[in-house]
Length: 288
Image (cartoon, rainbow, N blue to C red; front, side, top):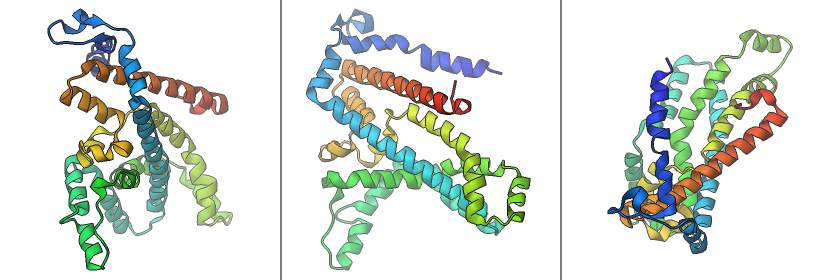
């Protein structure tokens, strides 16, 4: 039963590992990966001295922290809200509406956002001008995008993330909840003393998995919504978008590989550190 999964990881995770060498050479097509000139840590030094590494890491981590913390909070809130609904058809309709954005292609999300925020014909500017306000030009203002990107991400992902927590709530022993009602517990007390403690293991494990990818940005979301607009790089440029430009625009494979290796090492260190802390506090909730 494990054979397909093992083959998948061998083919797509372990087989490409020799490509790490590209991060330590000045790659060119003629000489190939192992024939290119070895330059040691020069690619990493360039990233540090250029100041890009700090900005890329900061943007990626801050966005992911907002996605993880706010995303999990909203997912738990939505799951509890759905669980408390008594009207079955309304619950199903609500689940469908909340879950639907997850299935929308990020390319289509980018088109929707552009049509909402476009300076000339956007829906938002249409409302602003009709109310007598000046037009808003978000694609020329980097300061607005941290909030916009978080809102867009939460809109698209909250429904999907809430499914896991909703399933965990469904797994809570109904006799425990009924006993609490008999003892006079109200809805708030039921949530505080039964549902939330029961969700704790699920929340911790999902947070651990999410923190493992805290330095891996959502390329599809950022590229399709922001694109390669240099006016917004200060607040929207993440590691993945930089790697894309370095490889597809500048053809700088060595620098892109150096960034990717740095990203993987930092992610590994974060997972090991957080798992160690969790193991010290709650051994049952650690990954290993």
